Length: 576
Image (cartoon, rainbow, N blue to C red; front, side, top):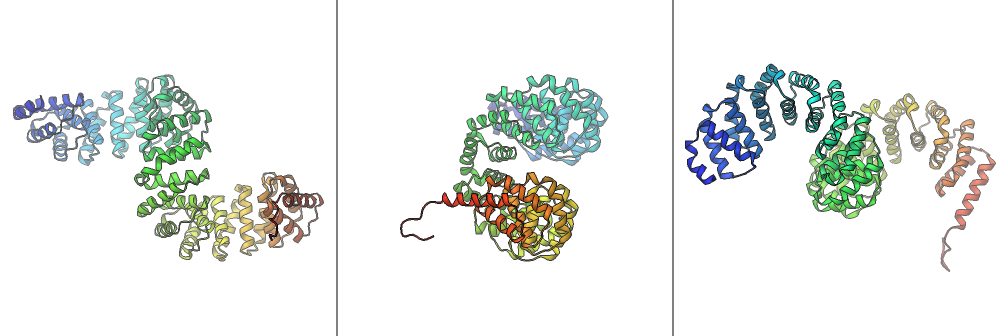
């Protein structure tokens, strides 16, 4: 049939060409030689194409995923001329076709949007959804059109089916457009129809609401329940989207994650790099430790690691470090992939990969040399967390990189007001470990810390006090403020927090008796958690500060004796 059509193609008029290619696309019959002939004939006759011919032809080539640039340019030029003749279906199909083929034509899109605004009341729900999807896919932010579609969608929301809802939500998410009336209307319409959502609708809706950071538990709960009921129908992208959405919304639904893990392991061979990285990130974010899943992700990632995008490498590294999963073949492969893409890694990617390696205790000099160069090159784009994590990572692995730390110091001074308590104290700790006093930076950290102490957790107090001691930075008002802020949360201090904090006070000769009495009582309460370093630091500190809290001293002595008794015997003739 196609050979006959090719022989007769010059006899086809505009209507015949449009109808013929539409028919082939509808039955998904892809015949490349025939499409080339139709495209050439259509370009030659484009002036004779009516609005429906133009819309149907563009739709057909998009359905066949056949991107013929000259034909699309000709269609766009002719469509602009005849735009006032287009009906809603034709406008929606034209926009959808150019979006599907990722063919941005500003003149055409502006013309379409103007015509849509004039005819918005005539649009069906499907036309509205297709229009929203098309402009979102091409990242075209046309505010009047966006607002008109939103208002029309709210007015017709009771006619929306599952795919309409999920595609509209996806469009909002892609443009990061939060419209409360529309979001509320979509959520309300989804609830009674959630059982009719297909797996892709479930995944896309969850992903979209999470991307907009909409905490809608009445909607997420039935999506989760329906996902578990349809577990065997979920594709890798559906699994990933639902897991990512729950993690983004801090929704640790462990029964759901158990089910998603089982489905993911079953279909792991079909996971692409984005699926692997996002699933790993999601389960790490909600602290869902499933060893078979982590091992499956590792095994699936290794042979295709070179195909991972920079952010995917970063997310994968971060997730495995979060679980303390030290897979050396994967780490070496990940390092090679990161080195190959180093010029494309942004500040967050670089800091996450550095943090992952440091957390896993893995030194790779070529990788860290590249991270250092990239971090310095991108230093003006780095936020406080990127800077703190990079500094912490290099200090943890004992990489003395003077140019990098100088760049981090200067950038940190500019960003301290936006730093979290963890960023502040990690930066202080990292510079203290280097034993290179940076007075301007510590002055700034001290001033910012006093202002933010109410937000500190025990680890922040400990890290800051320890850093001040190591740097011999005797900031009395700050030390007094740390004592006052830490006292009410003393019961949250673990044994290491206690030992490092009292060590810091002793090193600086700070005998704050009420605070030390509180620390002594907490040390006694948490002594069962102590290791040898904790015992040694605590005993030394209280001795230096001349604090004689007998129950604690006796308990430390008894714990130390038990540790000594538990040491393995030396071999005959050996020496300690």
